[in-house]
Amino acid sequence: MAEKFDVLIVGSGIAGLSAAIEAARTRKSACIVEKGSEKDSNSYYAQGGIATAIGANDSWKKHYEDTLKAGCGLCNPKTAGLITKSGPKEIKWLMDSGLEFDGNERPELGLEGGHSENRVLHIKGDETGRHLTEFMKKLARESGVNFIEKTMLTKISAHKNEYQKIVLKGKEEELASKALVLATGGYAACFEKTTNPKGTIGAGLGVAIEAGCEIAGMEFVQFHPTTISGVSGRNFLVTEAVRGEGGTIVNNQGKKIVDPLLTRDEVSRAIYSEFLKGGKVFLDATSFEAGFFKKRFPTVYMELVQNKINPEKDLIPIETAAHYTIGGVKTDLRAATSIKGVYAAGECTNSGLHGANRLASNSLLEGLVMGKIAGRNAAQENGNAQKADGKIIVQKEKEGSDTKTVFDAMRKVMWRCCGVIRDEANLKDGLAGIQNLAKRIEVTEESHNVAVRNALVVSEKTFEAALARRESVGTHYRLN
Image 1 (cartoon, rainbow, N blue to C red):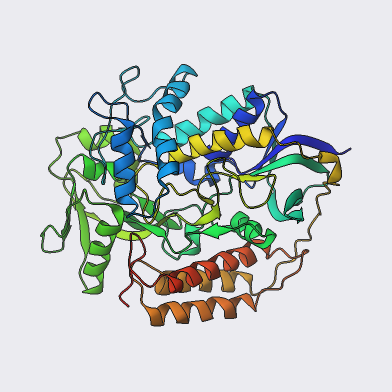
Image 2 (image 1 turned 45 degrees about the vertical axis):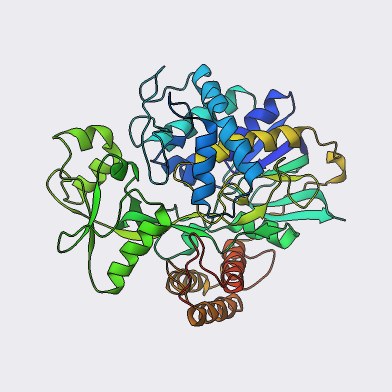
């Protein structure tokens, strides 16, 4: 029997959950489609917290100005104003709903790079993303939101630029909706060195691109400066808050190489440049009071200890890694895409908030605010769910023998040719490399290679955008 919903949301991170809760609040039926679980989203692993201007000496206007400054003149001022102004209200809603931040009624506010005031809220030190995601998923279930698990988006059908239906993989049932919200996350795992879960390769974004959604800002990829290499198949992120509390960055001679509170792009370039000279780089937190690191950063502390590093005595070896992708589906202030009936929120979008460089801890706030806006506007769509047959094509598990080889090669090309510091020759070589890899993937609707195919689409668009923008700005730094 066919299931039909008013709103379908693809993705179960903060943006998707926020959209679903808001859609359900308007008494519309909402369903979240999730590829794995909340643990597969970047939201779950967010350590830094949520940036919001609720301090006594702070204001949304200060937060707004810091956001614009970090974005290097390429932010959409209207988007930045909307989101920073909405922040305090969203935090109050979360607290009124029962979420406890560190400090409870008087939340403790941390300082991070690029911020002029202490304004970053945390939950249990460095476990903000995990607890926020679990809390919002609980709210979503209590709100009557449906969940379809362990499947993935493979196609968006649109006719005359109007949403009709989606195709999912691996479910023998029918599904239809009046509107669609994309909250499928970013594509930083397309890079060989990344802090992201392995599934964040932009597969959903690739589907949106193929459907005709307008995209923007694909050249802007934020590399996190302080990560530890080779932990659980990805780089483990050491939260920026460590630097906010007084941690410094030094080379193997013990010399400070950069102001640790500069924006991420500046710190990342300084670290990467040191590596190019053959040096090593460390995060130094040995000046902290005894016991402070373990109490303030329990997750990071445990990871370091497991890697035989005592942050109270030892320097922490660090390197840069792809962390957050600013580019994506272009959205307006209503979270609407260029296809009628399709909305989007979170890291899969380019909302205009981040410009050329995301201000630290603005991403969870964006997901909360724009997710809610997307859910509200999607719920008001009058699209006819009956027009979509909603059949989910059961795709055969047909994996080409070359798939893993192609995927691994793609990640190496992205890191080598489109990384922290770029130049024309490498960008051209990288684009050609991605295009050649795409020819090795069998392109059929039955193929298990759909995710890798879409990751290659996203990678190609990233190279094209990086070549087109010849000047250096924010996270996009070109030698020539």
